[in-house]
Amino acid sequence: MRFTITQWKCVSVLILCALLLTAAKSSYQSSPSSQVAGRLLVAVPKMPDPRFRNTVILMLEHNKDGAFGLIINRPLGFAEFEIESKQEGEGMLPINRTLVFGGGPVELGKSFIIHSTDYDNKGTVKVTDSVWMTANIEILRAITSGKGPKQVLHVIGYSGWAPGQLETEIKRNDWYTSPITSELVFGEKQEGKWEKALEERYRDL
Image (cartoon, rainbow, N blue to C red; front, top):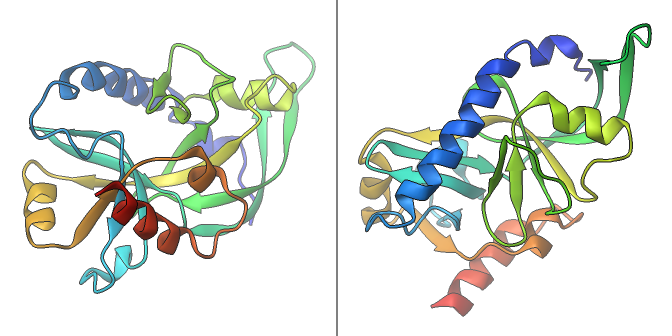
């Protein structure tokens, strides 16, 4: 599987998305329905929707307008990327072979980088004290130049809910919530992440 710069033609849309998330974060922090934002959404063992069975979702937004999150335990395979250099004459720059995750069934052409806190730009959303997310091309340039974050999860597509939809699913007991830990998000062992998130959920009760 190979992705090229064509995957990044919607950079302006991604930047706008990141800015909207940043703005939304300040609004949902005080919202009574915001308990899912900044937490993990964990599928129950008998999840009725096959698209989300055994999934763990990093929740970035949850307010009166809906909810937005990224699945972090569904690897799709390894990919190589190329991005256009900002320096004239350098042409295309390769990004090292990287594991790509399926973030959800919505807009599979969009990319999001979940990462550690050692990288920050104007499009970065600070999800927790240890896990951030950036959705613009500058983070890829930083990665290629060795100035990017040490821990990275490259996600394509996302999971989204209409207003009130996630609340209904939670009341129906389709989901648990669990605290976010960098160990779980960035752990190299993909098998067992769902089980680990369930364990953290019970520890958090």
